[in-house]
Image (cartoon, rainbow, N blue to C red; front, side):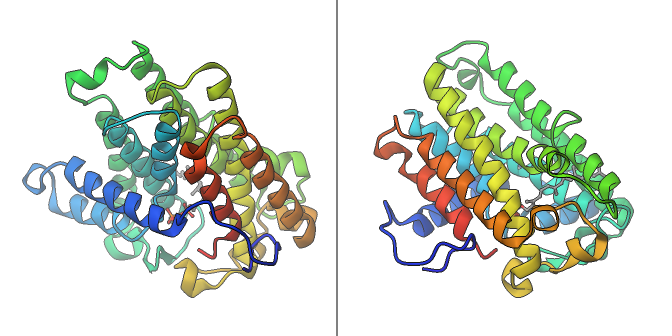
Length: 312
Ligand code: GRG
């Protein structure tokens, strides 16, 4: 098996992770369809722009991580789904805005023309704003029964946690330093700062929200936090590597843009081989963090390895 982080040779799979990802993606996709307001309820251009980006074929890694984490701690049923879908809405908003001419100016995303290419900049900005806001409506709009989880009061804390990961202390804050670092020589702590916030915070929050909603606390939550943070950083390192070595057709977006824009990335600071080594170490740390868990955490273990091996 070829591994994106440079690990060669066959390995034993704990489960069929591709089937698992497909099944969970289907569940997330149909929940997203259900949770969007009815088509009569909002303006057609906005609905079309949101649907274009939301259903363009994303991997759904963040919602799937939240479900896998929820199930790893014994969570049952569907109360995770509004949070899982909210995380995907926030992620999709960030991609729409990231692709805008004022930021990365990308023409393709998820194998399709970017939102602003199809609908114009104004509608793309508003589609992103709409998705971000819908995410918070969805997280706070659940039936009364879902407002009484085992550890009462946790719902408000979870919404706060998602806001923290998405906002100035997380994704948006990291993105600002990313934009401001373009074309400059940056050091490793700066790249780590950018990656941990721009990408890592939402991935770690996805894992933590799933765990907390499923009733995970104490040592269990601590271990899953360590898993999520290491995996989040590894995810963006692989993304950096794919921007150099990946295939645009598989990725559904253009490659080589980081170099041409002088972006702060792991390969630009550490070089390709060291970046792969760092990515491997982080994936190992994330899998090691799950030592105390049994087979219920196998999906999380295999998702970490999927991240290391991903081609898209
Ligand atoms: C407010 C104008 C304005 C911009 C904000 C916050 C922001 C823009 C951008 C966040 C930066 C960002 C896009 C981070 C995510 C980077 C990343 C690894 C994206 C790819 O994620 P995948 O591989 O994509 O999970 P799919 O398409 O599979 O969902």
